[in-house]
Amino acid sequence: MRIFSGIQPTGTKHLGNYVGAIRQYVEGQDRGDPAIYCIVDLHAVTVPYEPAQLRERVLDTTATLIAAGLDPERCVLFRQGDVTEHAELSWLLTSVTAVGELNRMHQFRDKSAAQRELVSAGLLFYPVLQAADVLLYRADEVPVGEDQREHLELMRDVARRFNARFGEDILVVPEHRIPTVGARIMDLQEPTRKMSTTGGSVEGTVYVLDEPKAIEKKVRRAVTDAEDPFTIRRDPKGKPGVTNLIDLTAVARGVSPDEVIASLEGARGYGDLKLAAAEAITTMLAPVRERYAELRADEAGLEAILEAGAERARALARPVLADVREAMGVGARAR
Ligand code: TRP
Image 1: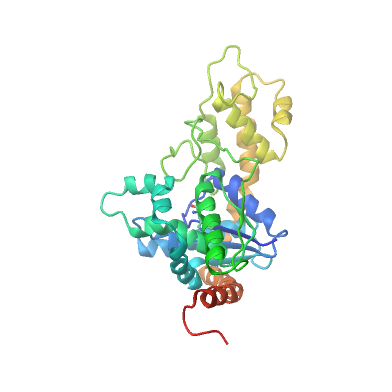
Image 2: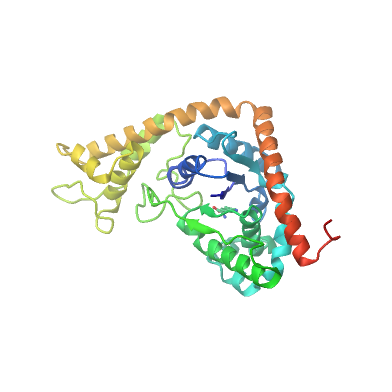
């Protein structure tokens, strides 16, 4: 079972990223043959950004992933821009990608609407590069969030169309794997919207690297409801704030929501729920924050890890790209 996933080099990952994606990566590294995790700096250049900052963010993300439990010996962890095969396959795949499909992608619609100066072609082609990321390794499984469903469907179409046009079984049609646990971590201030890097509220977003004090403060101020008398129960529609706090506590403790509810039987108000949530989250994240500080200080060490990962990624990618070039009649014939 080959696993591939990509993660954006945004410096600060939040609780939703941690529970929904990063922990899933950690779980995948012993199932994957191998599990391949890519920090997607080439995707990051499709929106306005600062070049010097991009390098920093890649290192931030690398350190976060390792602090959270990724072991560069047990998985392939690398930076997309270090493996030029991604860009080349991306170009080759444009030949079997419909512009109409790219144009209809929700993410493209949303992101391009937000661009003031320039809607880059890169933004439109973003999903083709994402398809190349995965297809380059003949990955079977792609663990990513629900928000990537469209990109996954497009990638599957591209693989099928490529095989139909250039030869069956050259590319593998991958499966989407959406995390079930904690897939929906909501903003603490606006519990009807997902915790997110863009557009969420700072007070409602818990970052993986937040100090325990900051976490306590954010959780203490979380929006609940005015039900009288108060009840601690799951009701995503009627009680989104309370439901989110229950779910967060459950995920952080590694138990079911029912167990959390049972543990709060004697609660005197939502304050006790918040206390439980803050404590569970802090306990889960504190070791990650501590390891991060150590890892992030050693930039040369992080670069060495990424380079070793890129070396392994290239070795996996090269033969696949060679098959694609051969099937497409591009470049000199393979001998
Ligand atoms: N687009 C993905 C995101 O924003 C990141 C990504 C890039 C990715 N390439 C990928 C995810 C390949 C899975 C597989 O989250």
